[in-house]
Amino acid sequence: VLYWLFPEARYTVTVSQDARRSKVSVGSNPWARPARAHDISSICERYGGGGHPVVGAVSLDPSRLDDARRIAREIVATLQSPPGAAA
Image 1 (spheres, rainbow, N blue to C red):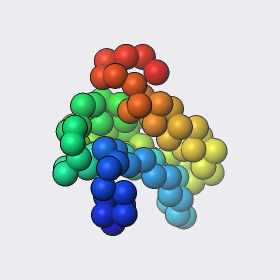
Image 2 (image 1 turned 45 degrees about the horizontal axis):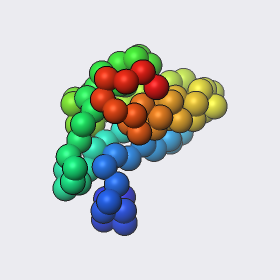
Image 3 (image 1 turned 135 degrees about the vertical axis):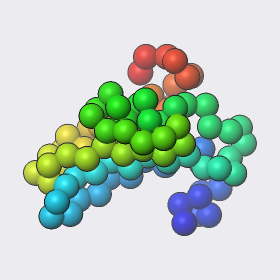
Image 4 (image 1 turned 60 degrees about the vertical axis):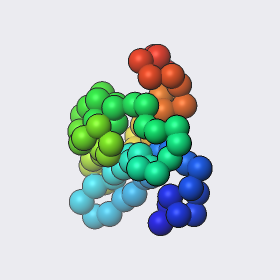
């Protein structure tokens, strides 16, 4: 849905919370041009998460919503930087 609403978006970063976890989800738009330039799994691994080159996530304790929001902001900054640049 997000890529339908925002077809120009190359990536999405969302934060959610439920009874089991606070979660940062990261995805790349398969229809975007230019195409994905970052390895999302390696970005998520920096925060104890993982995934695949095109999608990934970081799961935290549900009480750590503020940390999830901070991580999401840092991931956005990384995705807005050239690949390989420290953000």
